Length: 86
Image (cartoon, rainbow, N blue to C red; front, side, top):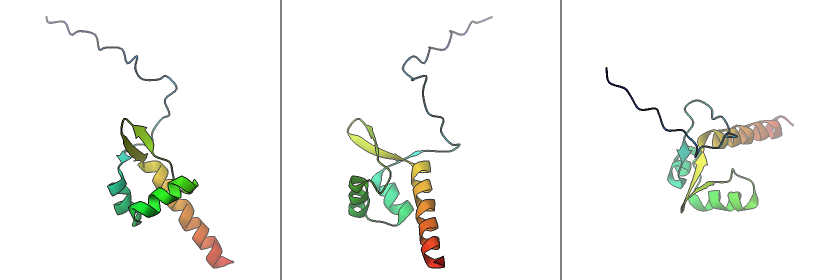
């Protein structure tokens, strides 16, 4: 019988990691343009103003958590609907 080595401990993963929604993924700026329909400059301006989810820095790259962007989109829709009712 062949023994399988023990799986290496995931010591590099923080124990306080935030649980992710199922099927969540990271998006790059081109993915955001496609998902939101907004341009790169519009997105980066809103990030700078704190009006759009901040990217997560991964080395020299910046990525966005898809679920955070979708929550932001839902909030924008809700704001628009409230304005149209008033």
